[in-house]
Image 1 (cartoon, rainbow, N blue to C red):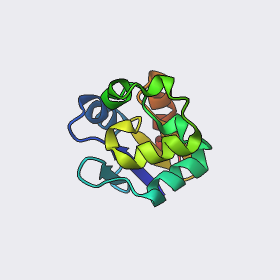
Image 2 (cartoon, helix red, strand yellow; image 1 turned 120 degrees about the vertical axis):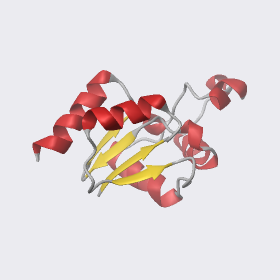
Image 3 (cartoon, one colour; image 1 turned 180 degrees about the horizontal axis):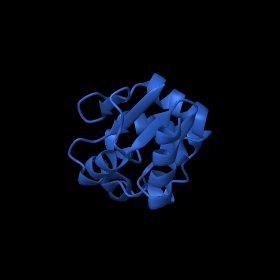
Length: 118
């Protein structure tokens, strides 16, 4: 599977997609208009090995709900990811059996290399 989960209103997501030149073959899912499903989250988990790795601790709701002090477990992260799209660390790029989560320079470079080396 080749897929990118992103937010169309996020300038960082748009910049990364342009920078990487996401191929037409990729499925693009705007998580605001097309909600994440349990199947989406499970697939990401199976590649990454962690729901927490997919979770954005920068999300406004994370701060508003004081979740930092809640002692969240993997199942909690999964439920929160399904509850609201802003909890997903974006973008998430899946290139076959590889997953690239977030927008750090290192992650974006690795995704670019993976996508364009095949």
